[in-house]
Image 1: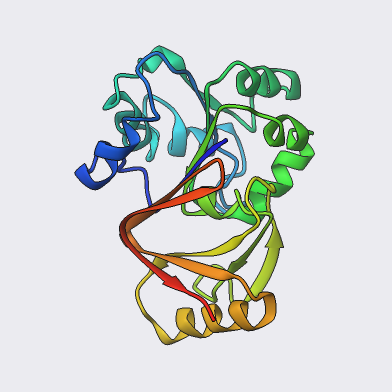
Image 2: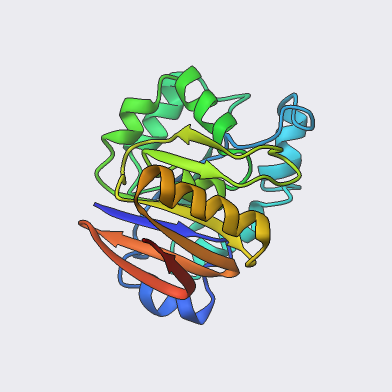
Length: 222
């Protein structure tokens, strides 16, 4: 299995491209799991379109341009739409894709919606590439933590999809007291390594259990 854990969707940056081109191939198809939006701002299809639609989606161009930089055709990139796709269509998109791509946002709400669509087993058993940025990175861990920030007021652990279970991940790392306290807490309570990807500058590739660090990533352990 290949897992790619990213900071953002700017995956054509040289420090990523030179390595990711070994995995992401031009003939691949991609299913983008766009389930990580906030309930308060995305309540209907029209709101969802403002984030991910081809015509006016805030994140559409960034996500798609990152993938087309590797030669993937736009016609081979599909977004799983929470508001308009049936559970059967969503499952079909995932099963027919070479790459499953999780977007950034709220990982716990993304997980709720995955379970609502009964996609957990489909995603867990996918045998292609699993990739995602920010929320889409941490959700690839059997258990992940979130440091307190403007969206999550308290430190907490959450259940993800258990592709990976040997480490924890601190995304958007800026060496703040809050982040460092969270990292120390995870190490003390879980006894596992924490990788911290610097804000917009780091990534991990896990290929059959072997971890490769790309860009600016710090490793914390006992």
